[in-house]
Amino acid sequence: MHPLLIAALVVFGAACLMYINVKSIAATIYIKTVRVHEEIDSDLPESPYSVYPAKTHAGKTGFTILKNGKYIYLAGSNKQFTVYLEFEEAVKSMNKYEKLDRVRLTTVD
Image (cartoon, rainbow, N blue to C red; front, side, top):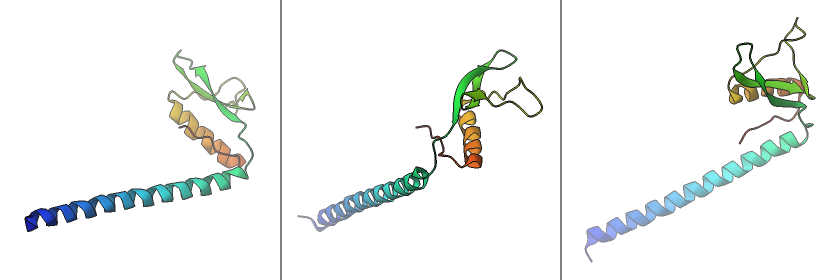
């Protein structure tokens, strides 16, 4: 066989082995990170917060945050609550409330 072909095969084999090893290391780090996160969160109580569909005054559909099934009203108002147009915004805001109350954070997969 030609020496250049042999060298190319050796380099290709080494690259494949390196790719497999890097993927294995990344998977191991991910699993350890998730386990540490789950162990930290397992000590915290369940979150009393939830996201619920709502409408704005303009009639647009959005989402609001509930605590124990009740609306969280704005300060100084007994009938106004925040409506988030994006679901992700509502979850981020809900996570802030959860951090303040030291309860398990809600995640969206």
